[in-house]
Image (cartoon, rainbow, N blue to C red):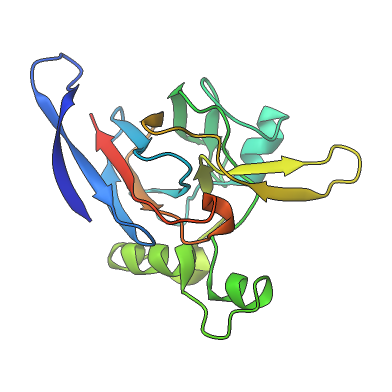
Amino acid sequence: MSTVLDANSYSQNGSQNQCTHEIPPRSGAAFFLKKGERLTVIDPNGVQVSDLLAFNAHDVHEVISNGRTLDYASKLFLTTGDPLYSNRSNVLLRIVEDTCGRHDFLLTPCSKDTFRIIYGDKEPHHGCFGNLSKALQDYGITEDMIPVAFNCFMNVVVDGKSGEFTVEPPTSKAGDHVDFVAEMDLIIGMTACSALQSNGGSFKPIHYRIS
């Protein structure tokens, strides 16, 4: 992970520049996000997915839940105004701004097994699952504790009659972003996704800011 100064980004009071952090292609990062802080996830080049996980910083067994979130929202595609719930039905994050409007909360982080089973790779990459596992291990989070991620910018098209789905290139353009506000102290895990199909056939970085 690298950090660059973004001259076009300002703190909430507009008085100083913020740092934009870069997650290089096919890698991951983990960090604390305090209650009330705003996390901005940016697709700097367009057509790139970022898997996002959130854990209660004071009890990592409380974790983001796609099942509870989609159940309470009564819809598959979440955007501005929608809360992301935990496995204990508490709101972890709330989407407060979204310039893309298309994300996925159905599919699990890609892994070496994804590439082996779906793509037939003989020497599979460890994928987002491996990157999240590595990034989160210092916080006491093990592989078996990693749930389905909120896949920022991922474009999963679902057939309403058959239930079949396809993974299409993201609709995100260069500079598109989705902003979350933390409703409790959190540990965040994020990636620049490692699956070619999810990212329109190429691997690119993801940026993020905390304000």
